[in-house]
Length: 285
Image 1 (cartoon, helix red, strand yellow):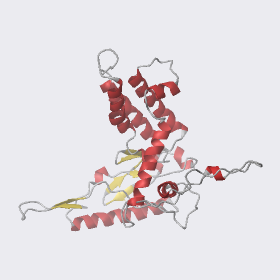
Image 2 (cartoon, one colour; image 1 turned 90 degrees about the vertical axis):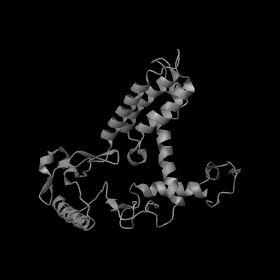
Image 3 (cartoon, helix red, strand yellow; image 1 turned 90 degrees about the horizontal axis):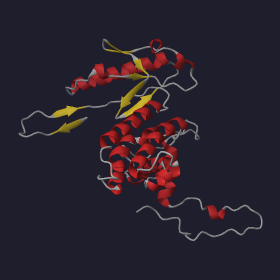
Image 4 (cartoon, one colour; image 1 turned 45 degrees about the horizontal axis):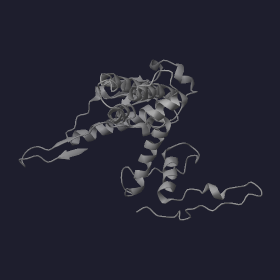
């Protein structure tokens, strides 16, 4: 909820709530629906106290199902709808939240398809800037690719990048096309030479770098900050994937306490080599 003071002082303040997301877990779908309806109606009542009106027709409903769930093959009409104050909200296969398309199994394949199409669209609008004959130089094309095309393609990648074959394959086609536009190399050029001569990083390494760059930021935030570090829950399995694994890895990177591979030699008769940089305990400044 945001408030803004206006001038003159007798003007009415403006407050609004935007993009609210509520997640509900339960043993059954019907129970989850009941709890979600109660929570949503509570939000609506609280909004009346602050003269805030929620756009109920814009509300979307998504059921998250495992990939091997039998309910994935059923029609959406078989899922119970959400009823909020005389408004019925039907379930969808995917929803868009803060620019990211979230599907029911969190595969993000639909978002990857849209991201690749967005990259092609921007590349098409820049294709007239052909730099080899009488257009822009190569370094300008590289700058446009990094700041305009790839920035739009990889928007919020830390939320949807999973490095699965389906996601990587869709993005790689567009990524290689951008590299070919930068370098003006023929179609029979190998992918390795294409990426190298276009001065682009490997796509998977670049996306991993963006995720890790974000994970380092919470280490320097106050503990009470809303974007504070993610921690594993004691009531769940410790080996489950999640942000806490990325946080633990980045913690060792920030504190300089990564395991030294030169001290792990198990080959008999081979002397272990001491690391040239033994000072690995520097605390973040």
